[in-house]
Amino acid sequence: MLDRSKIGHEFPCFSADVEKGRLKFFAKAIGETNPIYTDEEAAKEAGYRALPAPPTFTAVLDQESPEFLPVLGLLDIDIAKILHGSQAFEYLAPICAGDRIRVDTRISDIFDKKGGALEFVVMEHCYTNQDDVLTTRATSTLVVRNG
Image 1 (cartoon, helix red, strand yellow):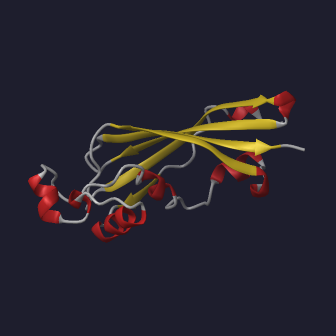
Image 2 (cartoon, rainbow, N blue to C red):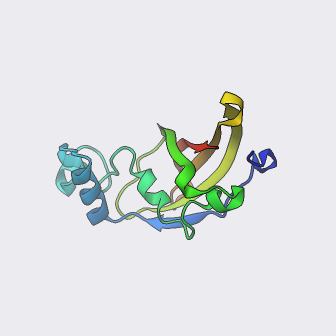
C-alpha cells in the first residue's frame, strides 16, 4: 500500500522557459491548425502579446523537472506498474512565448479501489508566470497496479 502520509507532500518547484519554436512544434504535433499558435502576426491580431501556448502545453513543461516523475521515488513505485489515469486543466491566463513558468506540484490524494489492487495518486500542478500570475491549474492521476 502506498504511504498515505505523503498526501500534501510538495515537490521542489522548478521553472521552464517557453520558446516560440517549441510552441509551434507542439501545435503541429497535436494537429492544431489555428494560425494563432504558429503565426506571430495572427496571435497579435487575436490579442495575444506573443504566440500563445496551445491547450495542454503545460504537460510539456512538467518534463522540465530535474527528476523524472519524482512521485515514483517518493512513494517507491515501480514505473512498470503505473498507468496514466486522468488529466484535467483549468486555464486562468494565457501562457505565451517568452514566458518563464514556475511549476509547483503536490500530492492531493492517495486512495485505492478493488481491495488495494489499484491505487491512485492524485497530483495538483500550478503553473505561474514571471509576473506571479497563476496561468493554469492541472490535476493528474496515476494508477498503480498492485499484484
